[in-house]
Length: 606
Image (cartoon, rainbow, N blue to C red; front, side, top):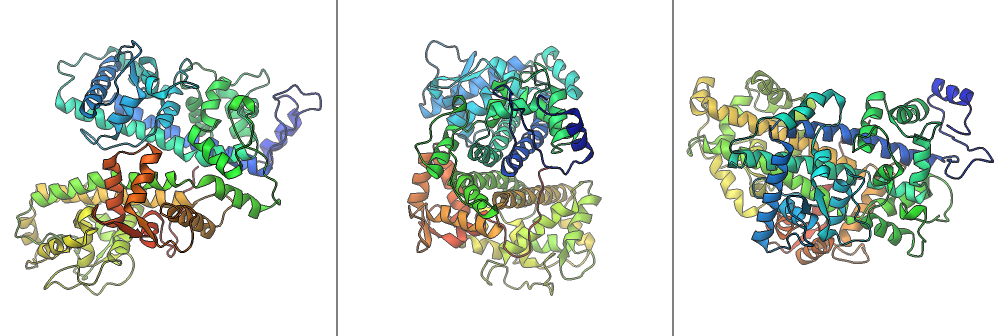
């Protein structure tokens, strides 16, 4: 790297804790980076880690997508037809300007299809997000200055998006092009698998983009341009390839291991060209339109464009120190959109869990008390309570490899929710056991675990919980097995596994929402509370105690990311029913924030 001696690089390799200081020579050409201060370096590290770790997760989705066995042209045809159907059902605008839909799928139609729950779960995304996520896979695509409704996903971009990039999966990647054509690739079963797999892939891509938002805004605040980062990632020949990326991110910066550096390069080299150009990096570093608007509101609207418009921001004259940095970060990192995105993810996670609960209930006679029989099944030691280790052992014996930490997340979530319910929930004639410690479930808790979430959140449905418990208990395992045949037990284990995985993911998402580098958790919680109050009170006054349904829905419509169906799901998640007109701010915060006590687990990004 120009301007940095070999001896200095070697010292940094031997002393990985030395902060990065890449100082350009006095006569260095423009574009060679100067020193990165600590806030800028920390923001860059977060961005690179988010991109690398996100790429590893997305690669897994690509592999699963390819395992469906569809040729890329078949998959693209299915997607085109699904988008056409979505546009026709909603009378949305179809393709125009003379393009064939089989050559280009408009973003407006793709957005409409993603937001529908037909043949899969809904995925919320704005047109700007879709453009950034999808067009980054092809250098020739560009939507700058154009109408996003008429731009779209082309076949070559679809291939770059959906097929694995890691050389470990080269055989799988090549095999999809030579696979036998499906005789009935438009069959309902194939469509259902394709839709769910592709939506999961796109959702993962969107999450990677959104998780990097905070780091992008912090880099903008530190006035670190994409060209400066490109110079850091490039070698002495000013070319950015896998070797130069690893030399900087792993050897010099010490931020990534070698696997992460490889994933980072694959993330940047979406076209698999073996080299990264400045335009490729700009997709990762530059602010989206929404992020730029949020940034302008935070630092002022009179900031001129620089670096070709790749980043926008201005130097904020504030006292130096961690307190000033924390305050700036809070202002830039908490648009209410992040809270809405978390809510929608929680709703999507709950859907398959509730579906599994319904399947389990359908396999058990209606006169059977589900919570009582499941309690007896899990409480093998007849302790009078079900510990998290009991659930874990039962799942292990059933051949389901669910980590103990994942089961613990489920138990904590159930206990947290059960503790907020009125004492009457449970049963007539069924009493809780003596357990009181945090990782033990009582019969009342089992009611909460087995009932669908939407039922629990509706006060009118508490009578259903009582009906489930109006039955005699079984004292022997043989009797329980008679009541729960093997098919029902398999369905129960599916409920426990899905619920545990969903609970762990919700815990991770909540913790991630409040993890802002350099900011005390209490300050972050306060910033989120202000954002929530601002839904119904524009100036986020402390006197605002309730969020109104009409204000909530109006703000969602302004975001243009979520459908009315999404609004109903999110509001029901908060209030328990779409008929309820207001939700206390504290109740809103209980849903989106981790408990203040108990210290939820931190999930480092490395």
